Image (cartoon, rainbow, N blue to C red):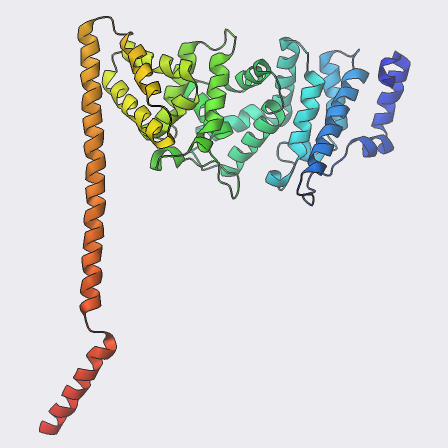
Length: 388
C-alpha cells in the first residue's frame, strides 16, 4: 500500500528491495522443505510470492514494460531455483512454481502486447526457443533431462497458474505457434503427455504399446480443448484437428483405442468435428474403425453407449448422398466384424498358450525327479559291476 502513496515513497521501497537485508527478507528460498505432509509450507511460500508479485507490480507501475522486466530480473537473478537449469532437484523444488505465481500476479491485467514482450524476454533470458528446437529435433526420449526441464518451465512458470482459460490459451499459443505442426505436436506431448511416476520424465511408448488410462491422457485432452475453445483467430478448428491428427503419430502411430479415448476426453464438439473431417475427406474406413473403438472405450469405462450411437447419427448427416451414407454404415459393420475376429483370435491364442503350458507342466510333473533317477542308475551300476 505504501508503494502507491507517492513516487518518492515507491522509490524508497525499490531501494530497500535492492539492499541485502531487503532481498534476504523478501526473496525466500525455502523451496525444498518437504517436512510438512499437509503442504502448508508450500501454500505459505506460494502466497508469499503472489504478494511479492503484487508489490513489484505496484512499485514499478510508472516504468515502461522493458525497464520493469530488466529491474525485476536484476532482483530475481539471485534466486538460482528460478533459472531454467538452476535447481539440481527440479522434481522436488517449488522454485519454478513460485516464479510462475510471481509472474502471473505481476502480469495479470496487462494487454497482449505487453505479455508478448514478457514471453520474448523470458525466451531470450533462458534461450527457451533453442532448447525447444533441440528437444523436438532429437529422437523422442534421447534428451530426457532437457524434455523434463522444458515441461517444468512451461507448466510451472507459464501455464498452470491462470484462472481464466483465455490467459492459459494465450501463453500456450505463444509456446506452440512459432513451430510447424509436427513440432507443435511433439511439444504438446512433452509438456502435457504421460510421465513416469518415479522420475517425472516423459513416457514416449505409452500410447503405442498398450491401451492407456484416462489419467495419462487428461493433460493432452485439456490442452487440446483449451485451444479448440479459445476465442482467437490464431487457432481455427482445422488447425486443432490437424494438431490432433499429428499428435496421434507421436512418436509413432498410436493404438486406435488411445486415440478414441483422447477424442472423448477432448469434448463432444471437437470429437464430432474430427470425425466429420474424416467423412468429408473420404476417409470412411478410418472413421468406421474409430467408431468401433469409441464404442469399446464406452464399454470399458461404463459410459452410456447411447453417446456413440448419437455421435454416429450426427456423422451420418455429414454425407451428402444415401449411397455414401450406406457405404459408411457398411464399413462400420465390417470394422466391428474385423475387430471382433481380432479379439477372438487373441483370446483363442491366449487359451492355446495356456493349454500348452498346462500340458508341459503336467508332463514335467509326471517325470521322475533327479533323485528318483539317480537311485535306479546306482543299483543298475552295482549289479553290472558284480556280473563283471
